[in-house]
Image (cartoon, rainbow, N blue to C red; front, side, top):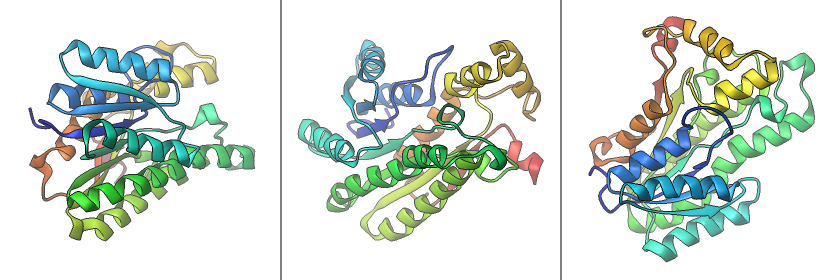
Length: 266
């Protein structure tokens, strides 16, 4: 019960269509398993409700909430809903990301429309979510903000907007960490590597016209550790640690969860 009685907001708590478990849904389930009360937030309310129902099956407390990260007002409402329901907010976990499904591409084929859409969701949404949760955390003089970036921010990655926005997320999280340390608020960012999630694998299979098995096998082969992609549970467990008091002296950190990918690059 490492998050006993903690109040958490997980943004991106639903998941894309496809096989397996997404990072946001796994985070909700792990947080609830460890005693947190969770507001499961997604722009697809039905998917968020599905996540919340799964969380409640284990006896935990979880409510679904609909918010669109492209609309700041809904992120403000999200924080207000959590505070009205439980009185405080201890954890913000921002797990929203878009790449190929938003039109991301190498620079030669890249469009303004793709950049505007992807940057609004990946980076501006993260910034606005933090904007509205920080006053409550400062007043409490405690809180944890966790962002989900990607090792694509640091590696040779072909798609313009995803790389740029995920790199921006690292810089923003570090800024939040240093500017809010005196208030007892910690902020860290997780950098997943190649993960076996619906967004990562099923979306690529659809775009490429290949089978899911083909895409998964090619990704597995690139992972140094056991030549096997990670899963949403690997990211969720890292988030659980950073959210817990076990990470009480850790802030401003970019934590790779990547099966050795960055070591291999470096």
